[in-house]
Each structure stands twice: as C-alpha cells, then as structure tokens.
Amino acid sequence: MLLNSIHRENVSRITVEVHDRVATYLNNRKRRDLIHFEEDNNVSIHISSRADVSPEHLMIRCFDGTGTELKFLTSEPSKSGR
Image 1 (cartoon, rainbow, N blue to C red):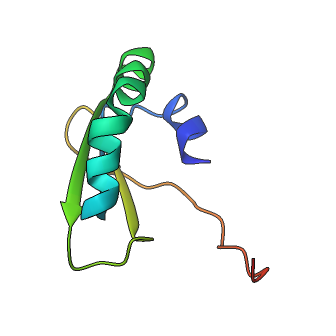
Image 2 (image 1 turned 30 degrees about the horizontal axis):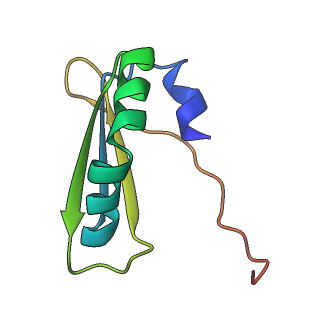
Image 3 (image 1 turned 120 degrees about the horizontal axis):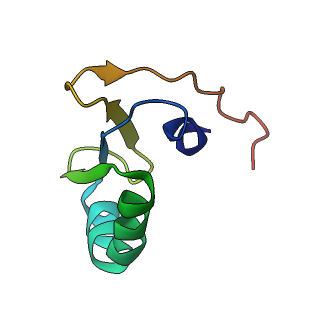
C-alpha cells in the first residue's frame, strides 16, 4: 500500500488529483485527518480537483525533498465484479 511506503521512502510532498466533489469532501470534511497525517509523517498533501473526470478518478503522486517524483508499485485492481 502506498501509505505504508511513505515511511520507507523520502516522501516530502503528496499530490492527490480527484473529481471536484471528492476534493471538496476531502478538503472540508477530512482536513483534520489530512493535517494529522501530514504532521505524523512530515509530508505536505495537496488535493487538486478536476470536473472532467469520473467520481472514481484518483491520481496520487509523491515527491521527495528535491521535487523528484517517486514511483511506487501498485497492485492490479480487483476483477471480482463487486
């Protein structure tokens, strides 16, 4: 999982790109949780919104202190049909 990798890597900034409504929810309803995560992990989180994507859209990018993007391996999405 990406969040577990943050402890092992030199992540200093995380950008999250989501649908407008999801961004509004995260920034308004989950801001306190995001602040705690930022403080506990010494990272900065930026939530950006897009209106031209589906509500399921999620793009997470992590950067180190020099601004270099860090790549993480992700698992394949579930094909269970749930």
